[in-house]
Amino acid sequence: MITNLGYICAFIPKFMIKNIQHIILVVFTIGFVTLSYSQKRNYDIKNGIGISGGLTQYDIITDNFNTKKGNGWAAGLTASVMLPHKWYGVSYSMQLAENNFSVEGRQSNVFNTTEDIEYKLLTAQLSFLLHVKLIESYVTFDLGPMLQYNADLELKDENQENYLINNFETVTAQDITPISRFNVNGAVGLSAGFSHFKLKAQYIYGFLNTLNKLNDEAFNELNRTNFKGNQSMVVLTAQVTF
Image (tube, rainbow, N blue to C red; front, side, top):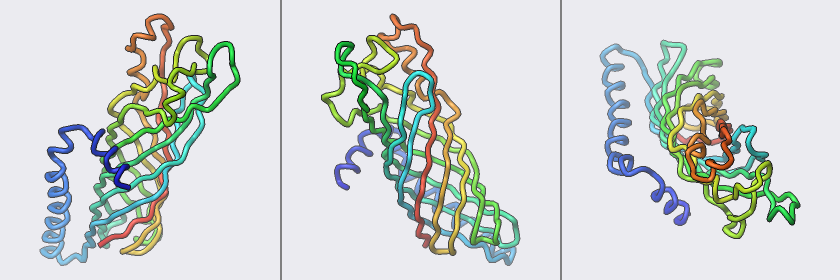
């Protein structure tokens, strides 16, 4: 766990580290301001600060590579506001995740037996979600936008860094590790449970080209390939709310 935290701190951009206290302050302030407003209106608005954790399944949808989904983990902090007199609630959340997936490759053009080259990707996500009540506040349909920061892809086995990527003659596993730093996602999902504990399932799709940075890499001057790929991510979590 300590090692994972070390990785997370290493990739979160400097401006996020400098402003993390401000982000948390805003989350708490939103909760208290909403509570104060609810008292003036005599509404029993339910605010909460939640901690979540669970599993991810990650992939990049692309025609450039042959990829396979992989499993990882996610942890997050959420500030939620449920409005009893409305058909919806809202939440603001920050989520960190370690995602895994693989790309088909080979050791060389001589030994062309296909192998899975495994990558790890650390991400940080900020989201604003609308929670549409299906069965009061016990079951909700969740949707909204999300801003994501990506680290570079990291090879899980450094001995594979010179392996060749299938569909290419000279592109290596190490060549494709730089990816676009930011993404804008759409998230949809379901939440089920009670006020203090909920199970959540969420699908996250990346609207921007995750592989766009590869188009400017030096190795692509020879290949002249149009790299394009969109993130596909499933997150299953349990959330405890205080």
